[in-house]
Image (cartoon, rainbow, N blue to C red; front, side):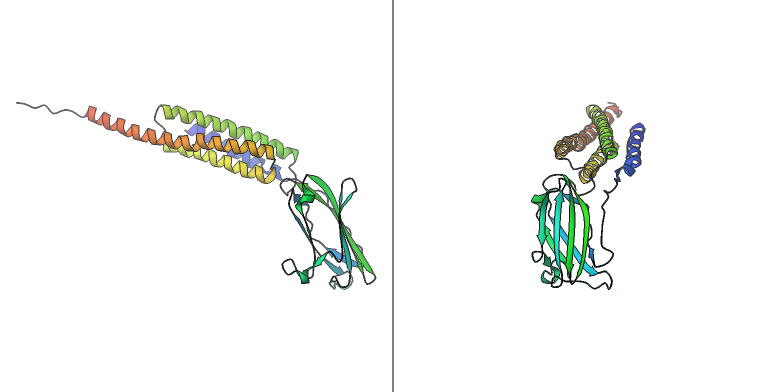
Length: 269
């Protein structure tokens, strides 16, 4: 038992040591604005999840005075350009709605909603926002990356980490399954054994949530769902059955032993 606990602690330690590998660097997102004229304030969304809608909200200010502009005083154009330089989205005033007329979005901001069908595959995109009016002008440019998770694509180090951790989890789970079956056959499965098996399964579920958040590859997801189902039977259902049988039969054997071992009284006639 102590040896198994030590092995599980080693797995957890390796997991904690490897966590720093998950932080990938953001892609460079160059933002340009004029030093005079209009300042376009746009909270950048570096990553877009595949097939998800994109909501664009930006504000326009006078650089010199800080006065906010509305759609009655300036005109704006929003473009999305793919990696081949093709303009795939172009929306201009007055088709860009304004916050005062759309209280569900924001006040004093320009609103654009783009359907997820434009982001059906992983790719890199660039955007440009241009506004002009009252003799002033300004622009802002930047990049989007369409990923399966809506977050930074996993680095090579992170992929290696997932693979190594999966192999460790699989090897540990297989060992615990064989260990549990051995004690099931000898009917000496204990509550401590059950705790180890269930703890391993909770670790497997945690790994799935972790991988789904940072990687989320459909083929891997399909395989791991099967893995979750099989390990759930072997590490959750079978151990509880083993504990019940071991407890019941162990209790019966103990009573039988007590009866056999109890001294008989001799009746003297």
